[in-house]
Length: 313
Length: 313
Image (tube, rainbow over all chains, first blue to last red; front, top):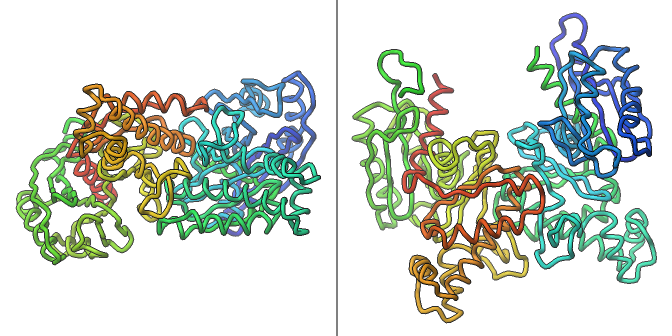
């Protein structure tokens, strides 16, 4: 807590919640972004939305009993509706337009609460305490089974008016590319997400099945696996250069399971960004690995909660 | 001045300057965006940078003598370097890295001054007093001999850390498209700027020579001219949908000589935006004509000056 003025007891922490298709996580986080205590549980496989909510609230209750939070932030897989406080995560079919924020507010009354998309939270978390510190215009990208993104502009998280800003996965980089489930062709996601890269490699005769194996094959020098990462990296780089031209980015942080592939991804991405970048101010962009790992969503949700606590104080 | 509290005399106006390849313009503008007095002169055709600056300062001097401005804003054709205060407008070859802000500060000492790109100024002006009022996330596009763009995010102009945000003309919408002088292929500018549309039509056998004639031919039902606007509109729409997905736009305002073509441009652009937009929040976007015409740069520059005056007060 050394970054804050000491006036007796440290200020109350905030509560951060991170909702994904495989796990629910919650944490008490200090005002300067340090996780003080945490809990997690698998996301229930059920058609009953209230059952999922109960699992989440059971996770949260002991943390709130331990220290009453000054505010709380919820990062959720999307789509979400920040105005309505409802969530419809693709991988939690029990929640469709589910009034999550109303449930949480009823369980933790009198505490200001914010809802934010998981990729926006990741960008905010990496900017606050991770690979994006010091950036004034940051794009955070999550490359996993899908591709998400979030922006930090003027040093502040930018969710946009509807909470959907930074929708990197559906930037079209090749209008003649493969069809995407969203209805467009050649979106970044349909070219560079883990399953997309593995599927393309399999079509070329590679015998593996997923992105983790694809990274192992690429590290072993398999030419198809290397070509698959090259193809995915080209799509990521084209999208990055576009967002850089629009938002005048100074940095990009890439997180997610596929980012854990390391240099077989980051080498080609950095090379392709240099190839695609023709404008001076775009050439200066840095592409970094995320450093917070699985904590990025919690830390980012906490960042929004700290803002709320500061505004409310 | 009814929008401001009346405390005797109205507050001092601001000075706005708009620098283009064909004309230099300056105006005294009230704190709520009304042009009070203005002056303009052709941009001197000379290799002597100081001669161009003298023409500008001769234009400004009587306005400053009339009412000392509280602050001043300069909108300039690019490239510009907002940090260094230098400008290198493509169409003013006498100015390359020219220390314009130092010259202006010496001529109008003690007055806070801001430098901003012309397309950012246009977006700021249309947001403040034009077709973008009420928008919280606006893209302003200038379609003329080139294509520029500027953003207003969270209701505030967003020039970005280097002043280059909103670089719409060089968003790549077709990586296999025609080569652009910037070094990329299939940029919006090389597909949809006035000369680009006219050149494509001429290659198909249309007998005219420029975008104004092309609009006349399109209004008269010429199939090649209509196809040229369709092709340009498709590129503009693809770029608009990309920026909307990244910035969560609620509105787009299009200005510039080609925008004066009216419905032969806006009809296809709106139709193509609807075709390209697959995400819910992108489908809600509105595409409007700019309303400030030649005043947009001055009004936008004034908006930045008013912010400076307010901060300095």
